Amino acid sequence: MKKHHMRRAFFVTLVIALILCCFLAPYAWIVASSFKNQLTLFNDVTPLSWKAFLPVGGTIENYQSLFKRTNVLTALANTAIVAGGQVALTLLLCSMAAYSLTRVSFPGAKIVFVLILLTFLLPIEALMVPLYQVVSGLGLSNTLLGVMIPWIASPFGLFLLKQAFEELPVELEDAARIDGAGHVRIFFSIVLPNVKVPMLTLGLITFLFSWNSFLWPLVIVQDPANQVIQVAIAQQGSPTQLPNWGETFAGATVATLPLILLFLLLQKYFTQGMTTSGIKG
Image 1: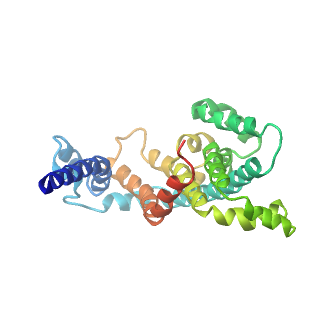
Image 2: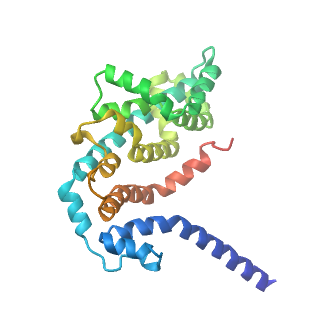
Image 3: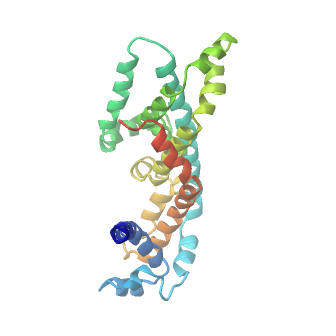
């Protein structure tokens, strides 16, 4: 029996290790390649060898070239501003909408909620042209505000917070009403402090999606001074020259590092929020 448990534990560990390698191998290749020149990079992958995943004969020339030739620091700052602003506005708007749908009775509340969730079915490609016309008409093209504004009304965020609000006991709010508290005071003093984990989870997810966005920033921003990091990396090469893949991988590494650090710091809250916020169907 003991041998059976040992074999089972070994098999489970082996499967987990293989899955982990499958997920980590592409990132290891990107980071390792960012420290190699063009010739070394191709020699390590044709044919593929273990050297492709390790910075053998590493150099920092790609990073030096990246920071000298491109506006990567400005793009990082722009991306941080867009992601931070989108997180703040999304949390405010979605939490207020979730409170209205769960605590304020009005005719058609369920229909409104269903209609909002149906927007999940709309592909982003179908929204590009009308969104561009609206944002341009408001004079927000080529601005960081124009990058973030269309996505602050998040159906997923509303669903996530609505589920969290419904799990809160209404007795706390009833006691506050007896003391004369209105909706604004109840919302900020009672409801929000009790949904910190779902709010943090939504904030992290929104930050990740905003940081990784590419298509919409590419469409709405043409000014290089307002580019976000994903667009700046994609446009760092010249159309008349072969791409410098080592520099491209260096840019990808720089763009990914803040996300990795953020996720490692907030991983506990992310997993806790996803398991306790009502996303169980």
